[in-house]
Length: 429
Image (cartoon, rainbow, N blue to C red; front, side, top):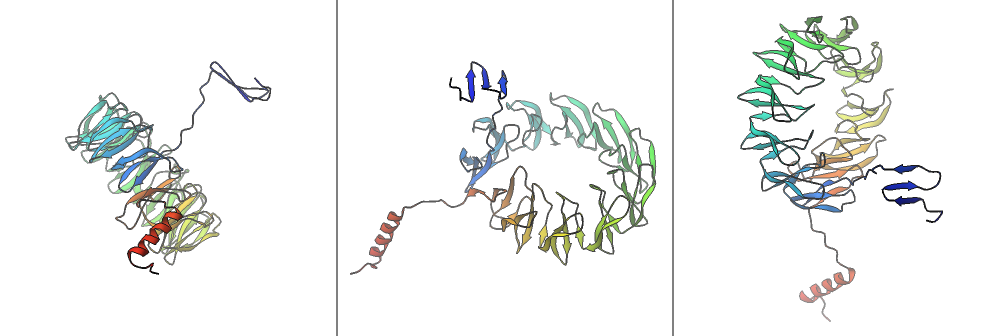
């Protein structure tokens, strides 16, 4: 071995020579290239970010890879492939979801069940409806009633509920006999079904309840902490909850104390220290002490996302920062919220994306399909609201081809042109 050699391999060991780091008896993580759905006319496959086709465009539709597998459709039936294109599960299902927690929800003959990554039927397709697995359980519906199954296919909670939402923080909102409550993952009743309505989860230790057309709050023991005196109430966020009384909105703390009086025509819950308020059909922001941070001068404002808020003024949209400075002027017909540094905007009935400085990254030439980037990709619709769908990345690279690209050398072009002239008599001497 030469002295200047940086890396040495010795039977199971990978070492960096010299005073650098040594890695011994450990697996090196191999970063696989991202596989992007690629459409060639009406068929789909997958490619790398530089558009190298990895899985041929043979499918009628595809879903993004999840847990190393992707659902694909052929002849109106769905199956599953791996990252090198092997058909792991044949296309026999009417529908299939991306894998979550090692399971895919599948549909056959209008009934739902679940399969594992090898295609084994874990839960037979006997259910009228089903939701994806979350924290080890999935809600399923049979004979109009909901319950829960585990990944072994065992019914953990019998199908006796009119509604049963997926578990969140160990509790599920359920409905029976027109009343709502909560159960735990063993099916134990934690909050009896005695309320006219209840929030979908607890937040900061409390849940909203509705009784006799009024709203209040309970704790996880079911004790009423804040009585049902409000016309409306929302979950606690950042220590405060939005409430409504006498058609006006304000905020209370978890002891029921009024922190910001109910004086606003509308309001949102607090997010990162600010809440939207509405006065005389104009919107702005307040802080948690009730101080007006951004005056109510806009027709519409949104939550701050990536430090910017979408605003609407005179039917045009733009963006402000948390000091109220206009960062992007109101020149767009529509605007969503920033994700991954980009936001969808609309102008002249077409959609594109701009960055946080207002630079046009993707021109407004598409119709909407998705409004936000996820892992650097977003789906758009091409050529009208009923046009074909394709993926673009955050640099504007299009992952589709609708016309066959044929490269003809200059010499051939000249020959073709000359032949055409001769044919039409245009090259007479």
